[in-house]
Length: 363
Image (cartoon, rainbow, N blue to C red; front, side):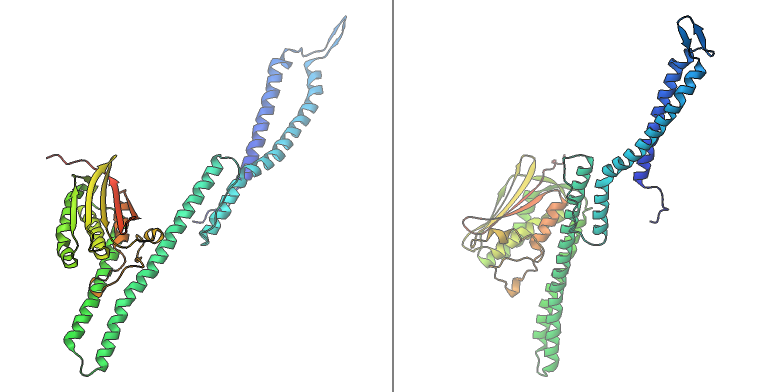
């Protein structure tokens, strides 16, 4: 938006200081006139003790030094106001410079204003915090776009390779080719659906309803029971009624993703447990699985999109797209909660979801 040029804030403040000094001086002169000079006679008096000046005599004697004093006050107010305004507006210049650098694309810039806390320092600190959050989000989006492009390119490149090989092989097995193309296509569809779900969770705006996490956990266990039986993993679910306010579909996806992640990457020798309970006004969902000991530094990155544990074995039949825990984190965050991943001391992973507890609907 283009604005017409105007006076700077420094000039406006300086003029304000000069006007204040002018008003104060005029007020003093008015007080002198009202309470002193108005009681002096208009004509001089000659008494036995000497000469008493008239009002006109006092005005002639008082006006020149009073005018000089007013001029001195105005000059002092202008000069002092100019430097005082510059000193007061110096923090704003720092903020303006940082804003222009950020607007030019340098999100790493910071004001880092020194000194004791006041209004300008609080504004600068808030601005630095905002830039830090924006830089983090932009970097996360850039990394997400890069990883998404790479992940989406992989199935397309595989399909092109399969078609090129089939085209050059006159004795190709059409059924085998179709099966392999179908598997690659399903992986691409799964990835796109995961991206759409992740975007939906980030945007929010989903309908709110009272949802029982314990029922969602039971539904997820029932859904993934065939996968658990195929892997020889025991599923254990227990917990009390845990009511939250949110989307049943999205929260169901949270439980399903956590449970599926635990089944795929857990150890068949240990059960996968799912529990729910309430704790200090929060609804808590915990999913645990056994397995090898995990590096805590690596666990901290598992909720980022397209991140996978280095010790995980990817199987072609259950190949994951690295979005499961990222989707969980986004959905939980959209519900005002938090996802915590922790490596168990005995091996395996513990995923804890905490969201604000809701109110049980009246029957």
